[in-house]
Image (cartoon, rainbow, N blue to C red):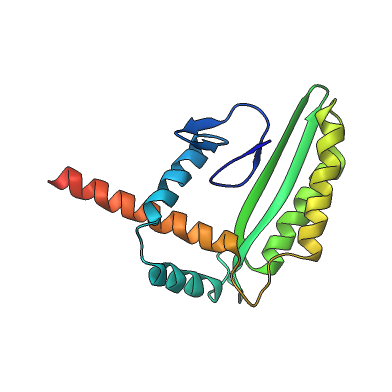
Length: 169
């Protein structure tokens, strides 16, 4: 099974290809371009930004950190239609758990009603949410997901600055 080179999600059908890379959608393809561009950014700049973000205030509730990426998993189904999504959220542990609990409840109530994928994906997403609620990223150190998110942000900023410079020239 293929995985998205930007977000790491499994790609069951379709996806977007760019050279040897494969992405789940056009948005992830843009993130992949930003990651490639971010490879030229010095490591100390990335590390500094990661430390500032990790030790800062939660962007959702304004509470004390540590701030990290917490992923919640949702599935809903209706007869032959099933939709599942993984949502990474930047925030404190409490805000991350709140999102995971919300998606757990939605999956429990709305996930089972589709054939065949609702019956297959609902237990998977439920277990993922429970694992996130019980475990989650180590609060003493920034996760790899947070580092990747910072790299994407820095790469996007650098790409935008370069595009602006080209237009001005």
